[in-house]
Image (cartoon, rainbow, N blue to C red; front, side):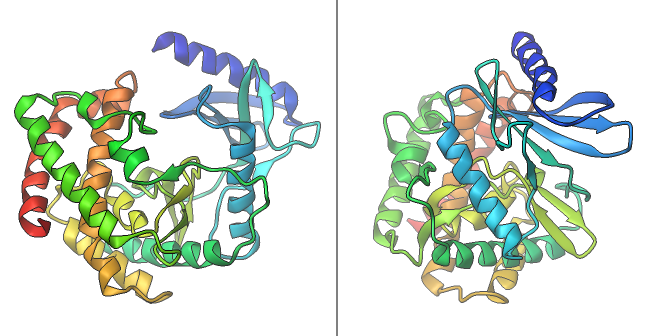
Length: 322
């Protein structure tokens, strides 16, 4: 872990040579997940976010595709997204010590927290999600556009899911494995029936968790499009409750999300009915993520307790949706 942090710090410092950023007074690591994100502070008060991409996760073409969509969303007044800046060579993506690096202008705002009053922010998130989905359906992508597909196989059931196998999650023992397997089977059958018609499945943000949002007055800003890709639109209703899916407030928060969504777009009953499936799928995906990212601070803080807490959610889901 310390070696990885040291390497990322070395890359971050070296990356500054590729940009017209003078009088840097501080570089600090603010997040280590799929990627390492640093805050850059300049003497004139300006700040930037520097993202060092994990080796082998996304190609330069995929990162270019991510940036093209988030810039289009901002240009089309769909959502406030981070603005990437070009390096000295004019490119948005720099290759530094064999790693991809992108720098964004710093966005003002406050990250919402689990203990906050979240009903209004969730309503705003629902509105933004609807605008993203409408934009994605009408936006003309380049022929080279490349992003992950987030479907049942790449999330839960495939040989090599994007974030690891749920069976390799911390504390997934015999009894839990059987319960989780029954849950995965039900998720699969429901999603097969739900289908992937264009009005249900398309380009989505894919990770609208609280850590990727900023509240700035009446606005919700959307950060970190690193996991944007092709998936079910209602999956964007599940990701805002990531890591606290079993909280008693979640049903009310999802109701607020739906209220916001309906201010912008039609929410069919079939879509609404499947939101619990996407919440359950996301929870099991995060069990897998914790197991495959056990070196991160977030995974260590959640550990086996998160896996244990998933049992009750599985039982409730099987009873309600089975």
